[in-house]
Length: 115
Length: 111
Image (cartoon, rainbow over all chains, first blue to last red; front, side):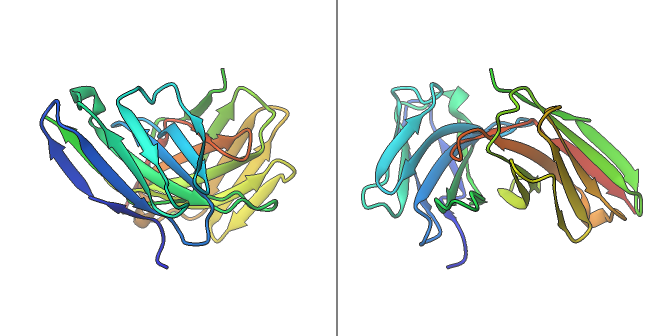
């Protein structure tokens, strides 16, 4: 297991199209997070899962965004009817729910450009 | 509102200097604080994690301190090298789940 994997690395799409990103966490990690980062800003929380349950969603996550983690392993983030404002880096992270260490491991991200 | 602020936004130093990056947070009831490094166009690499009960953590040339009562953390980098050039992000967790990030300090170490 080499860490958190995200696919694709880059995605260019036309406004109005749907896109889906995939995240494969570290296998023994039971928590999985999605963040969004725009240029020059720190990442902003979108949502997180503990196993297959989606426990929290940010108000940033509009109705056009949906995330799933069907078997408590990989996760997908779908954006419907993309808008130019959706252009950003989408980061996935995982962690192990452990009383002593809540350290995160981030993937390399998916950079979305909406044209 | 729980906010995290990082100062300075950008810093340029000559190689070999010791430097300090600052992070402040508005709500002192944190669970833990984490420092990350981000290279251009890449994901985040965890550097140091400080639990709320701890005062500091060290890894190699890096030392992070935490003062919950004043809402501050510092990241000290000793003997800086050009390879340290990156954006450094401070992130606070209030519940052990989601992180609230600062906007980062962009560090350039000149040879």
